[in-house]
Length: 88
Image (cartoon, helix red, strand yellow):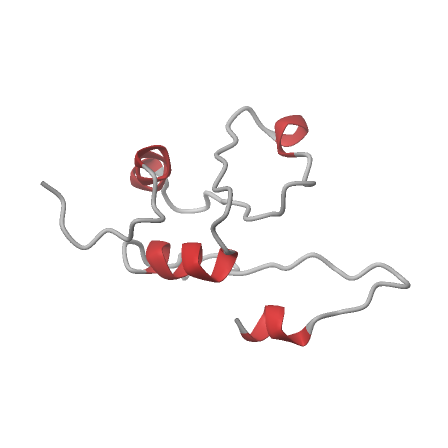
């Protein structure tokens, strides 16, 4: 039995995290992100906020120090930004 895994981490996500290595990337996006056009594997986490999901994941894996650990989408002209997103 595994202990200490956040309830927001699905078995499929846990398997993906297990197989990841140096240079691998994972994208956290809203429901409108065209994930299926970018790659064959899309895992949904409906109803789970990204900060909650990241908190659960960062308990399990270390960020790759050989790569840029975080990239955020650029704002588009006319967007209203929510500064709490970056803080969270």
